[in-house]
Structure formats: structure tokens, C-alpha cells
Image 1 (tube, rainbow, N blue to C red):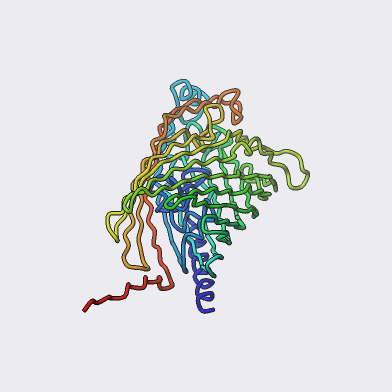
Image 2: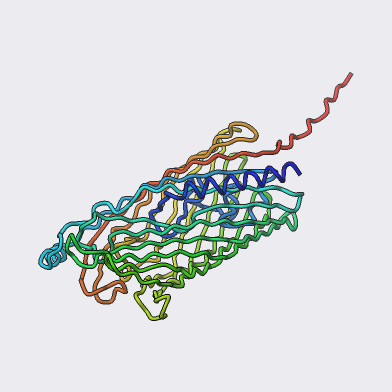
Length: 435
């Protein structure tokens, strides 16, 4: 009973601390993969098969059954994005001729802190209870106040928080299943200028909503040292409600239905020896759910504007390896490749994303039987990216805008892991004396 009270107490502390931390948190992309310092160190290879420890439950709730006892993990990732939008000369000339400021954006990326926390409690040899708190979606981009593309974007911000209570059940020695309930809050603010003049007023679209979804997963251990996992995060429907501010005097109550995508993650981990383990994973995200999202008046129901995403599905694949140096230190590394849901036809100034290569390293230091620390580092190489807001692009709005950017991202992640119960000690073999 005392362990149960401790579990609930720490769950509440984790929840409050994460909500407070997330008040100023920002992210450099719409989907936030940075949910685990352990997974970060190997480009998230094999996370659905449990390679990231307890934090693997974000991708696959069944992996909670791989963490015996009563555990807590706190993770934090600091994201350092870099992206400068440089309009071509014809665009700058057109902007200047129309009375605008013919300059680039400056760095639109903003340093972000993304925390995540996990707790689990083993009820018996079959049943586990847990909870995770994450921010799976969010971004903030902010160009210089007066720039050549301000009619398409002055600043953009999205923020989410997910609380996911989870149940894991070990069906047999080789099969475990898991299920979780996602309760998610989403808040969005998008700003753009109503003209090219430095004094042009702004249009501000803002709204928030709560939504509910679920997670499902299973793990298989067909052979000793082999782990296979499959996890699913459902779509979450948000009925955003807010306001459209047009200039300093006009406010229109609005609403919009946004369906965030399903995510399916497959992972495998194979132990080659007591020191070496290799991992691999593939993830599919149903971004094509986000097509053209109408924004309508909350009073009359008529269309006011739209959010023209027109995304395609996204894919991510990665491989990694881990080396156990000794009882205290483990080293890991990984490579990943991500196919962006944003294409040359649909890219805009708010999220100038493209296909990207991940290169990661990481380590775990086991302080004692109960306490350990993790660190991970990733550099993301993003392909050179063109922005062509011309007829055919769903974001196009009368003014042609052509530019290029070469984004890059650095990520540093840290984690603290603690086991609250005393790990079971193996019973020493009896001493046999021969006289």
C-alpha cells in the first residue's frame, strides 16, 4: 500500500513539474520525437522493442513490462534549430517595388526545452501500471519582425501536452501487451502581416482544445536475446476554438477541426553478446490526415480562412548499436533517416522542413543499483530546402515568394532514472567444503 501511495505522489509531482516547465517550452518541428535521452543516443532505433528502457512506453505501451519494480524516469531535451530563409533576387525586387522591406528572415528557429517523464509500478509478475507525460506536438518559428515574407508568416507557435495512464500485461514469458489512454491539450497561435509595409497590421489566429486518444502495443521474445515490438498511437481529434484577430479592431470567434495523425512504430533489438546489442526500427506517421483544414465562424458557421497543410505520410527508419563497457557504463550510437511529410509543392515559411539524416551518440552511467544517468546528442542534417509560394502551392495567396534555406538542428538530451524499490539480489551459491 505504501508503494502505491508513493507511486501516486510521484506521478502528481511529475505532472505538475512538467506542466510548469512546458509553460515556456518550444519545439523546432510539428512532431516532437525527443521523448527519451536513451533513445536519442541511438537515433531512436528499436525503441518499440524496449531499447530506450521505461521511456519506450511512449512508442509502445507493452514495453512497460520490461521494467521490473517501481521506477521513475525524467528526461529533458534541449533543441537548437538553425534556419534562415533567403529570398531570391526577383522576390526581393518585387517586395521592394510594392513598398515592403526586401530582407531575409534571420534565424527563425528558437531554442526549445522539451521535458518528458515516466513512472511504472509492477503489481505482480503479470501486471504493470504506469503513466507518461509528454509533449508530442509543438513548434515555434519567429522571423525578424519586418521581412520579405511577412504576409505568409510573422510567427508561429503550437504547444501540446499529453498525459497517458498505461496498463501492461505479460501474457506469457514471450508475449506482453499494453494499452494506454491519451489525454491531450493543444494550443496554436499563428501570426502574419496584412501587407508588406513595416507598419502593416497583423492577422492573428489562435485556438486551443482538449482531445482523447489511445495507445496499443505488444512485444515478442521469440528467442533469448531477441526482442520485437510493435506500438500504435491513435489519431486525436481536436475541435479548436478561439479567435481570429484582423488588425487592431476586428475579432471573429472561430473554430476548426484538426485530426492529428496516427503513428505506427516497429522495432527489433538483438543481443549479440554480453557486451553488444544492435537495434533497428521503422515508423510510419499518417500525416496525410492533415489536408485542407477549414476555419469557420463560431457564430455563423461560414468559412473564414483555412489551414492548407496538404501533407503526405511521413516515414522514419534507424539503426543503432550499444556496447556495455562494464557494470557501470554503456555507450551507444545510431543513424536515422526521415522522409518529411512536407514536399516542395506544400512547403511554406512557417515550417521549412525537408528530408533529414540523424547522427547520434549517447551513454548511460549506472551510479548504483537504483540510480542512473543518461545523455544523448544528435546532429540533424537537413537537405537544402526551396520554398516556392507560387500558384499550385496550397499556401499561395496572391504574392509570389521564392526562397531557399538550409536548416540544421542540434539536440542535447539528459535523463535521470531511479528505482524506488530495492532490486532483488541473487541468492549466493552455498559454500561447499570438502574435508
